[in-house]
Image 1: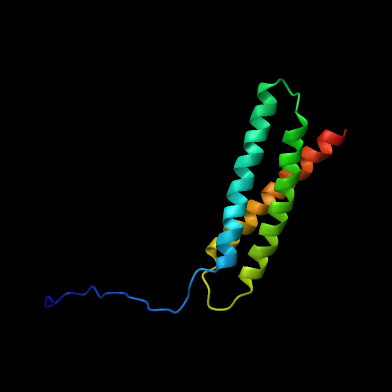
Image 2: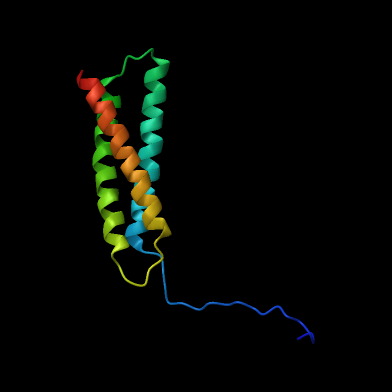
Length: 110
């Protein structure tokens, strides 16, 4: 039902764009790794700075998963006709986790 004199028009945009599966996997890797690294930092803090060997192993595994997520985010950004917001979020999240893991491993070597 249309009202006379109505100056508002519906703005509907139809598109064939979809979310990229690589971007969603990248985002999930970033979320899992960021939660895991934060948990390892918290547990190390609770022990007074004494990190167990398994905490370091978890951070090392998170580094590889984050690198994989970063590569997937970059590859998903290159796909045509996709929504790219999830790709950008995955790139940022995985890059932060890679940087955090690098700092943790560097400080652990000292």
